[in-house]
Length: 241
Length: 248
Image (cartoon, rainbow over all chains, first blue to last red; front, top):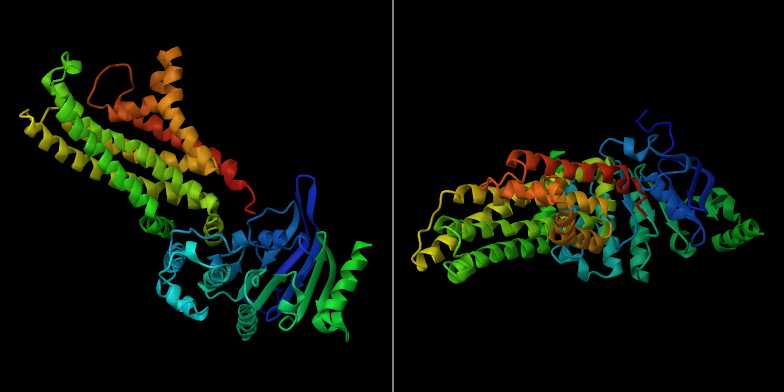
């Protein structure tokens, strides 16, 4: 175990989560293979964020398992060097600068502080390194979140609605970034409710609705000549009725 | 663990509220020492006191550092929930207990530093203004008064982290802590004076008042241990409850 040769990068099996009476995720299973860019699609409130947070050990499943590199997140050795995560973009201390935020993570994970400048360069934020995050636009926060995810040079990225708050140019940039990251066998799981954002980059698609799996497979199988939007709307409407 | 502590110390250094509260503590303690040397020394209210007691009371203003370090701990921990930076902390260290233990230790260091700086500046201000008044500048109890001030500063910073871990709402955590130490505990003691020594504030007074020997409170070492016990109780309770909650 652990060399990544013949295991899935992400394995979700029979995963369920209830918040009180609300069943957010219901008996969900899917896998993401190494080297793929998987799109995690579904309407708002479908359970995407809850699923991703269960993968990252932030939310405790009611039942079932969510594994990354065949382990629970909590059992990964120095997890941020294996998995990078971009969650909601507001989660920064407004009084700290971008560089301090990254240095805190470097110290906690025993990474060299020089990584902070490297990832800021990667997300093209070097000029904002010493500005306080409180004054950042949503798009800049997204880039800083991405920079944080890249700190440990992980081979797997989990991105929750990474294009939120980005302008068209930013979305274009994000797409190009995901594409280049996934070369050399690295893996991306990216959630979105805006199909156009990810249609051009994903090669694997997982669609959920109301916490249940609606469809899983390659993009080619899903669309079969249709646009992703047509296929998606067809499937999610079917699931609703 | 040492890595997590280093990360916490960087957060402390890089946060402006740390500096505001730290500097406020120093100005408050030294300012009150100056004021009490200039205004109250030899005043009618203190006629019953010995000269040594009066001098000791001036230096004792160093002990007013504790509400500030309590706030530092509270703000430092509950701020993680408030700004959701707890998400990053838990992504780096899925062992949630370790995040809080690192913070308890880091704020112990901060409480010690703030306590020492307050003690030194308050002692300097006390000596200066006592000599201005033409009074003697030292009394036998002064070293213990300052030691007690440093110890309580440290203990309250750590307690602040434990309470902040337990109560996620920053405003509620601050309001409850301050009302407890400045109001509720006094109210309780009014009705049950025999329990005063066992309450958190009584335990803290046993430490900060180590130069006294009233017999009403525990010995300083026992008071210190009891106070740490309360802190560990809050931290343990937090790790069983608040820290287990989903981070959404």
